Amino acid sequence: MFRFFSDECVNTDIVLGLRKAGVDVLTVREAGLTGTDDDAIFSFAAENKRILLSFDRGFGDIFRFNIRGSSGVIVVLVGQMRKSEIIKIILTFLGIVKTGAGLRGKLAILGKTRIRLINR
Image (cartoon, rainbow, N blue to C red; front, side, top):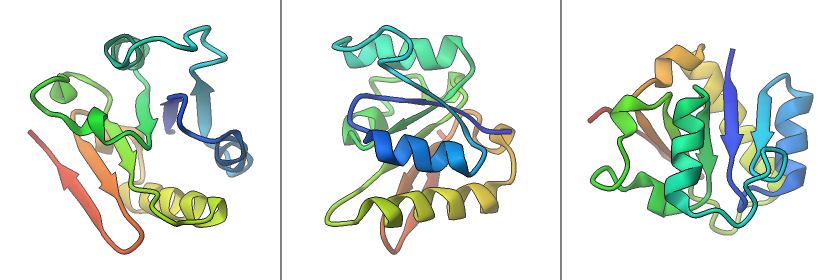
């Protein structure tokens, strides 16, 4: 099962779409961390064994964040995509990975036509 922690830039409609598909998503707002800096957001996700879901490329900084010691990070490069496309891309990726354990310690960068999975 996938357990996500979505940061503030992930739209509510996307969170609801993922939940509708059976994904466990906790938002920054629900955790009472609205306005918190990225380091605290990352730490919360890691401490609570949740995969961090963000549209912020900054979370892909392997020198700043200890991704290897986390449950994983997914950064979606949204560009000009519609919300429905973003949900579909995330769910398709999750279907490939199969379990949350498959993302442990990894950085996944999801784009409209490309997926990069980095294990460092």
